[in-house]
Amino acid sequence: MLQVRLKDADSRTAVEVTRAIVAVAATFDGPRVPVIVNDRLDVALAAGAHGVHLGADDLPVKAARAIVPAGFIIGASVGAPSEVANAAEADYVGIGPVYATATKADAGAAIGVEGLVALARQVAHPVVGIGGVTAANARAIVHAGAQGVAVVRAIFGAADVERAARAIRAALDSKE
Image (cartoon, rainbow, N blue to C red; front, side, top):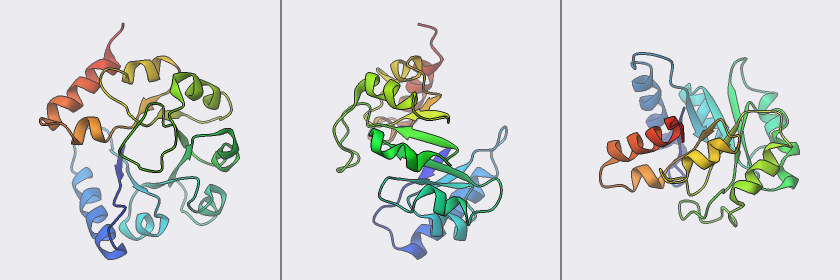
């Protein structure tokens, strides 16, 4: 899954960029790579994305579910017990920040792997660990029960993006 995160882009630019990414993703060999738009249901629908990821301060998941087409993916962010109810109609839940992160200024305090486990027990959906994920800690998140991890800085902040992505993939594939 690929999330388009354009916090500072105007709507027109966000739609154009997302359409371009959806078009490129459609050319990949192998399994479909769903393109999800962060926060902006309007952009996701206008651009033909496969879904949207909604945070606690965004449109409620239930309201989004009422207007999206069948098969449209909705993810929800959960970082505290008070946010669990909003995720009830989501397809997956991003829990965190597991570790401290500078990627999102308002991410809140890190909840640790223990916090991820506690919140994951309260949701009935696949869980993705978010926040401060690196090759060194990704496996611990999956080992704790998450089905995957969301990564920004550890890949896009690296000098060699491909190498950083491969290192995280290798850590997740490790049997240790």
